[in-house]
Image: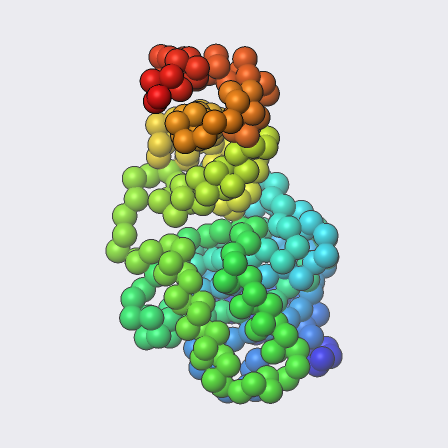
Length: 297
């Protein structure tokens, strides 16, 4: 591990200004990729005690992974100018698009590995420009291990060479494109199509358990209040109603495709009991679960 008379060279600028501001001047930097000859991507590993910035933009797409072993709590200023509490779980990601502003207030120690990737490099590798969006607290089955691999490579001195960096950059670009789509894609206000898919996948994977709006908001990297408003704007329904309808649709499929008891189906779909399931089901479908099951016979 390199130690630390190093200075951070992660580049951020004030919104609307091209002059790079040394916002992490106080950070302790353990290692960087500066001398590794990497093309279009720069990485460093460090830690800092506190960080307050307002209306800063990264000079390139920024991807960082938390190296903390416990939840990392801080505040983010939302579009309405309100500072909202945010929690990042260990080994989750912060993704910040090039030239999109962010405002953070961090009062505690944070440990991280961050990379700045030049959009032109990503476009050259994957053949398209990704519509990257800000996300905080994301765990991704591809990007998370890639960021861990980059962190390990930086700490051991870049021994794998330029081909490693090229390969990792290609994977980052491909995965960002998969997550966010192409830059010319458009969405109908509020949350994006990608965020809606993440919410639906999260609900479906945990449908037999309690699911809160706070959990869903954190899953897509938004504050609870912002998420609830944006979700309603995009879908025309509240997150709670969306979850309930996913539960009911799962129950309808289980009634048709299994011989499980209605009581068991109610529990498997996250309802408190059979009566709660039957009442909600009848209100939504205009038929009781038992009557609907008989119609499938």
